[in-house]
Amino acid sequence: MNTWRTYFVSAVVLVALLASCSGDKGDLKVNIGVAARVGDEKITRKEADEIFEQLPAKQQSEFKGKRGKAEFVDKLIEEEVIYQEAIGLELQNEPEVKRKLKQSERNILITEYFNREILGKIEVSEEEIRKYYDEHQEEFLTRAIIKAQHVFTTDRKKAEDWKRRLDEGENIAKIAKEESEDHLTAMDGGNLGYFNPGGYVKFIGNSEIWSNAVNALAVSDISDIIEFEKGYSIVRVKSRRPESILSLSDVRTRIVDRYKSIRARDVYDMEVVRLKQKRKPVNFLREELVASIRTAEQLWEIVQMEDDPYERIQYYRDIANNYPDHKYAPQALFMIGFVYAEELRDTKRAKQTFDELLRNYPDSEVVGSAQWMIDNVDRPHPSFESFESMKEAMEEKGDGE
Image (cartoon, rainbow, N blue to C red):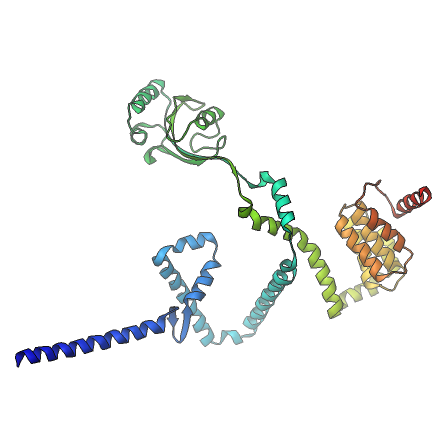
């Protein structure tokens, strides 16, 4: 009977334990993929990982390992409880907050459009990447690095005694801690940290004598007594990395980004022109300014007296944009291209402007001049001080042919 009761009690306990375990597993299933819960809101592990990946590398280093990730989620929870409380107070419905939210949304959308429709559509060929890499090797050069430790004194006899003891196998870090006169490094076993050959070294400063002697050492070598500007130093090289050039795979993204940043301005300008033609914007303030102050003739007169090429370009652009049907409009476009080509040496923008002239004013008397500039702007030719001097060169070439 007692045996039966023992088995019965054991069976009841076992069933209870199984039920308890089953319940725990159910809870675990609910939390799979979830990093945290604040009220009814979940913060998924995927969301936490995505936010973490957006942090700068320095901040990521503050949340290393499982403990670090848990602390990072604590920070997300702090933000979430404040966010939920703000929503509960309906701060999002306040006029000033609404304005800020709208501006933030606007900025995000503009940035996203720029990244997708401008940067995202700039193509950089494999040939261009390879060519840039081959022609700019110095840009990808990583200097040699040495890590070393030393003992220092201003007493030659003390240095000789150290050298003897080191040659007999005594530990340099021990001597540094107990006897070195370099108090900056003594407590750390004479550790000088990392430095570039010929560069600045902690305590040593910039010393060609000291640097040349250390640069000649192999890893684990202990130097002879180095007499330099401050006194006497004995050095042990702990490690060194030779000068090297980063591989193409290491710098590919950097090269692509460089090309994209160079080309982005031109692509952006063309995209803005396209979108303006599509959206038909009207700047009433500019119209009022032009109508009340300057006619096309006045702008043309002003630009003739302006010395700054960028200011002249702006005046010419005002004529072309605000008086597109005026006789000066095609001439203004031509002069923009001419200034870019002959004064600013920006042949790409010059060609773009001449192309704009050919598209918009195919029957203009300056079309021939614009086409000549497109054909010759990249070729060696004398500098033209004015439109007239360029026309003379065109006529001379025509007569010669």
